[in-house]
Image 1 (cartoon, each protein chain N blue to C red):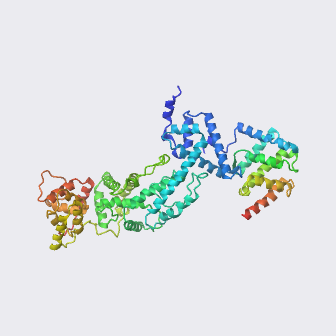
Image 2: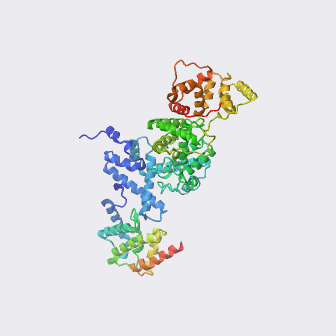
Length: 146
Length: 489
């Protein structure tokens, strides 16, 4: 692939700003739960997403997943305002990790729904339990079933 | 330095500098280098590429996922460009392609490219079905499994939208002249078309001839011909050339040991350029096969999208064959193992395979002879007369008697001599030039002598016929004359 068409290079500044603004718009929805991201946190979230995609060997055009994660998790009783940005970042990392672990058998919406359900129920808001126990078990059962 | 005018810029967008296998990228790079497209234009194109990729990923995941694995994304990206290449390669000149790219946008180009790929796939399937009906009846596993399994697999699994650039088929049978730079459906189409040309050539010969040759090839190289990865065309065309040079009928591939010895003598006596000339002349003869449709051997593209991926014609294949044969031939002559290049068949017709039997001493009885002369006289067509004579005369003596029976007229002699091989012509020439051979000995050659008088019309006609043969045939006949020919008149 020629360098100017490198689909993996970091997005240019204009695109990053566009993405940041889209994330900040989702504050309107999360604010009702007392959750809000600052512009800097939005940029950090984009950075986390980029790193997660890279480490999981995946490509995504657009930030639909981040927006869907915010929409799904902002109403969770286990997310506190001072941990909001960090929790979102970890959830994004877990999401791309699970896309590979479930061998892409779950669509984005389905995976986000499963994550939210487990996070609020069995994991009780623990990101470690969610990733290393509950989602891991779920993925194993899914793989065994098919 | 002044900026080049539009006209000058266009002149620089040279088609030869573009990579036809990555046409769109190469077109953009060259256009950018020449200043025909600026940074803003490039950014716009990059943005359109990303939009196309995002849309393709959505389609790929059926809208269920916005991300895919890197290798999947790379594959989809290559597939997008493969389709765009198919569209942009079609215009005659890169200027036009660039103009379309900028004016229409990538989505439209890609969409048209997909339509081209669909057409190409349909056409390729048609070529495959035709080829399947005309496949050679040989037991070579790679040949048959490629036609029966690998190619159907390709048609069943080829993915125009997401993996158009991939050639997902385990094709084992090697083409004589393969072009591995091409990929996807264009590769399969070119593969099938080239194989059609190869097949059409091999089908000139009977299945028995081809099978016998392959068996002899396997024996020579101590390989199981059914399991070996060989190219049948190469083996057939090589022996076809040497078989013609040895004076065999055009339909014969088998070469006897005695003919191998004669070929060795003739080829050894010539220098490298002489050998090339001799074999080149046989290749020319193979190109003008009577009754063969030239369309079978020169597949001219009938669609604009097919033109950029040309298919080698028979001429190109034979030229390539000559370049492969010549070094092998030179080495074989040097080391005295010509049988490694010229495959000798144990099932070759009679020794030296004369087209008519000259050596049997049995003369026709008088009644049969009179009957034959009557039949010949009743014929009005020279070709039929020639066929009667070559078919029914049993010895050289019969043949000479017929020639002297005044039953042939003018051009009919030429028709008869044209049916003879080098061996028979050498035998007749020995009789015709007996005095010259006796006096000149080894120095005898078939040069015309001014004012030479002959006793019979057949002699004058034969002399005329011999003088008008190509140089390599004359050389071969001269060699055969000098060899000790056992004639039993």
